[in-house]
Amino acid sequence: MSNSYYPALARPHVDVIREEVVSVSPEGDISTSDGTTRRVDVIICATGYEQMTTHWFNPVKIFIKEDESEEGDGIDVTKGLREDANFYLGIMTDTLPNMFFLYGPHSIIPHFSAVFCIEYQMSWIVTVLKRMRNMVKGEVAKNGGSQNVVVRVKESAQTEDVRNVRKEMKYVAHGGSVACNGWVVDRKTGQNISTFSGSAKDFWWKCRRVRFEDLEFNLTPS
Image 1 (cartoon, rainbow, N blue to C red):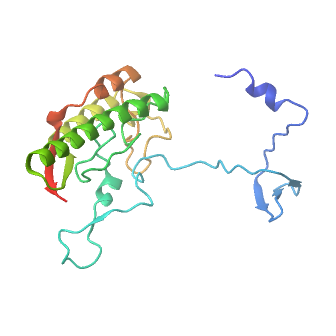
Image 2: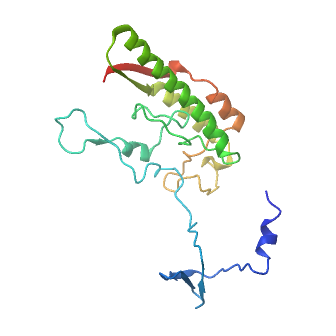
Image 3: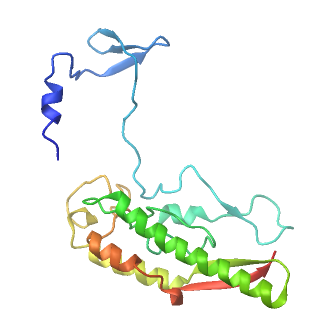
């Protein structure tokens, strides 16, 4: 909320231009559809964006090969996630071990601070990383040699988490089940896979501790 927004627009050196921008010259002249050309110092391109719906990974693609002898690029594991982004706490997905995300699908709270969500997700990730580090330390002290740790979320835990969020999503305005064409609802599927269904307190409660029983840790030789 701000009480300075409208006064700022009404200041004598501020113009609100409603005409469409038709061109920008190399020198920085902006021409609008009414035939007027204006010289500006800075241009901020704030023309909208694709919310993290079915296009969540675009333009990134991640290919995985079953083995080194496999020809071609391998399997694009992000293809299925672009179509239906199943994420655990918006942080991990079972198809991408050792890969953590911040503010991923079903972790955005549209009516609260993004920083709040990101901080608790980061705390969750750091706790998992500490467990991985301690596992490597213990293995090295016990058997020697270099080791890596692979962590992945169990598919069952991920499915349950996504199912619960989507169940609650039916009862909120931005859930996609009501006639509300918000920017968080994918227009192709009519589904919201971006935001969290509950309050900030609910999200904090989910991320306050790591449910290690939902994760799988495996030591592998380097």
